[in-house]
Image (cartoon, rainbow, N blue to C red; front, side):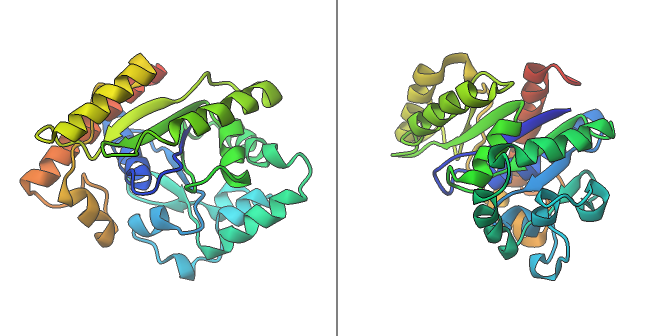
Length: 259
């Protein structure tokens, strides 16, 4: 079971959008159901999938506390989702006193792996490097960092890479370093091209060849509780679908699963 963590310290980089649409694209390409996990107390991924987060009785908080997968996961058309809402904020506090607090999620996901249900698990993290995100990184097979093609977007990469290095030493992590995805790309803007080129210089072939173009449809689809593959037929929506499908194909090839 491959566990992909989508993390970045910079807000507005397309983290949740990427988690949602990558899961949908994997399902369409492989015919298999990924598991999406919303780790952010804001619950934006949960809302984007069409759920009313404040009406949920079971969330990622219960999963961390030991509830089995079948008690917390919701079934969508293309994937399953462990949702989140405001109660997830309590998790950061509870983890402070937990036994082996950095490995709670890894232990829970090991139980899921034994069920042999999923090939791909995708985690959408909070926009910080707190204990929830650290739990995700310790559990990860891969780490994907969306990088917005705008000024200051590269600033958090060094901090994240340093944190990953520290966790590698402490927990013998199964991944080497992160992969990077350029988001909000507009080839007509010099700044966007410069940021992408600079990103390529910094991370080399860890940067995906496929950038995600800036399209209004990507911002609109979540308000209807839809991924981009279900949303509309505008040119922007078609462009976004093509981008996420191409990115997902590259993602699968790099991971060696179904690619």
